[in-house]
Image 1 (cartoon, rainbow, N blue to C red):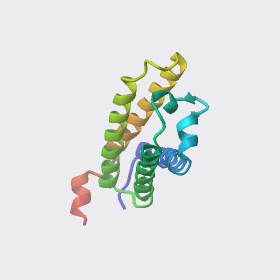
Image 2: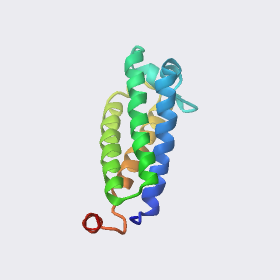
Image 3: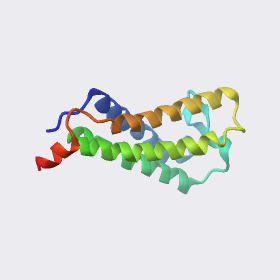
Image 4: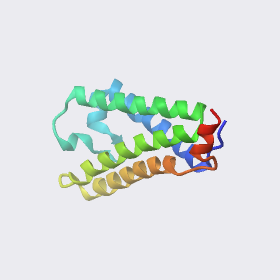
Length: 144
C-alpha cells in the first residue's frame, strides 16, 4: 500500500464528509436544500434564481458520486488515486468558485464573504489532494 501524506488523508476525509452532507441533502431533500442551504451561514441558492428540482437533484448526485469515489480513495489509498480525486475536486471547485464569485451582487455582504470563504476552502481541498506525498507516481506504477 502506498504511503500517503496526512494532508491528503485529512483533505479526503473532509471531501467525504462535505460530499455526503451536501449530496444527501440536495438529492433527497431538494426543496429544503434549495431554500435553506447552507443553513447556519445563510440561504445562498434560493437567492440565485427559480427552483429547479432536476438541477438540484443532479447537483446532489454529482456530490454523491465524488463522495463515493473519495470514500473508495480512503479505503484503497494510492498517490494516483489521490491525484485523480484532486483533479476532479479541483476542477469542480474552481468552476464552482468562478460561477459564484461572478454572481454575488444579489447577496448581502455577510453571505458574500462566507460564500467566498467556503468556496476557497473547497478549491484548497482539491489542491491538497494533488500535492505529492512520499511515494512518487512512477515508483507506484512500477510496483504493479
